[in-house]
Image (cartoon, rainbow, N blue to C red; front, top):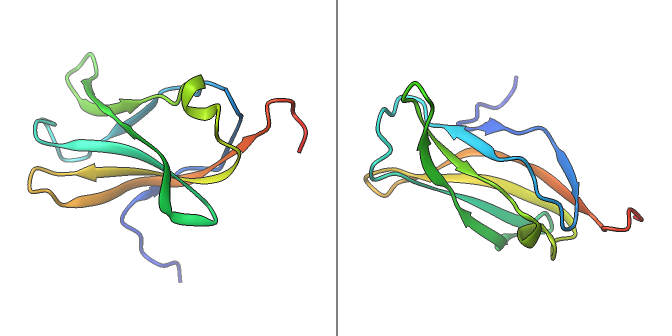
Length: 116
């Protein structure tokens, strides 16, 4: 029997150091207004998951039809100094200050020259 989880799992991703990734757009189900909510993208090295290698604040936005979501993009500057496999976690903080792991997955950053 699969263990119950309270967050979604992203499929494993790869990029090269210095790449800019597409924008991540994260919906928050059951929330009509993101006022008072925050979300951070946290990257930790797979072998050192207790220490953040990168933390980036997500921006609240709305679709054309008014559905709220958080957006964040890893840019060239963000990925340039990364190398190896990282745990990618989207941490949601609600209006009461409680934290929730909204999404999690793995990001492997390869050397820019393509060699492994």
